[in-house]
Image (cartoon, rainbow, N blue to C red; front, side):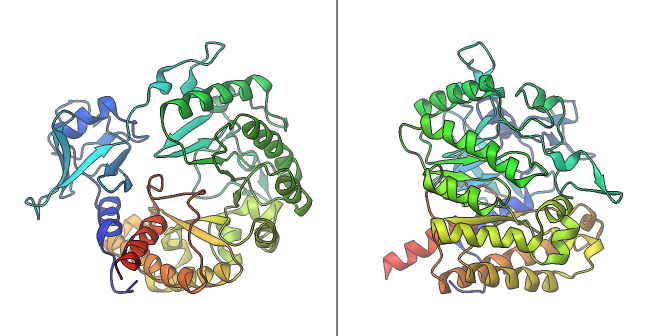
Length: 417
């Protein structure tokens, strides 16, 4: 692929991720039958607000005709808007090109979210969620990195705000210091898995959870979880282990028991310096070198193309790191080269730097960084013969990443030759 610019569905996805969508009655009406957004639409000063409440519920994810999935960001200044209705169909329209709307739909509100487990518990609170054709299982979300400080420094990852053990984890029965997952939680999870797979096609299962300060104990928790999922996965949907980096013998046990078919240990950022600053808990309790070594062990077991690391693309532009976008992009591309050379595939999710928004050129810097990374990353992965395995993730579920969209576009181009 040329390194000049993005095109096709990756370009549309990038436009919408960066520019957002402004509120229309059509967008508001779609929220009534769509998977709800975690963040309501907030009307800017002077913007017409038909709700009178200053905010409105909106859908979470757009689906285009070619099955591209895009997260919706509300933005009253955007040129993008939604027209149409459920009966006649929805269209994504840009004010600068109104003659070429994009036919779209939204990720639906599935019936299982309104159902109950066998013991009458709300299934939507069972620790299982979906986006596109991926099922995410997160029955122990509370992260111990939130609980204390080391030498006066908080241990949680600086970009994370949802892992604190609090009332949001109480209904799952998670208790601090307890490694095992309660049986009732696992039973409710199984009820949800059965309901979800009966209603919609799931192609990937992703096991995630909050970190424990002891990696071996974290491994024990995920071994328990993965075994129960395997025993309740009659369609043999591929499963990815999304824990933190684990000891080699624990990884060997996962492999020997065929509990998962891929792993994704999230390094988050490249360079030991940034890792220590952005992920102090991971650095303190595991360590940068040990984290990469665990990923390398995983490659030796599951093979190239089945080992991943989610990365937070854009946090490098936070002002405290004192990098212009070109310098930040060069650093990240260096990391791509190193990880791909080890058979590890990084997956980049867009991050909006909070402090970086104070700069007038914030949006242009972030977009230049993200597009430069996506294009150069594609060439590096091609050189190492690495493509995202469709058992781990695909364009139908990757809503803030471009790797699967670009791979699909490249495959289409190769098929035309």
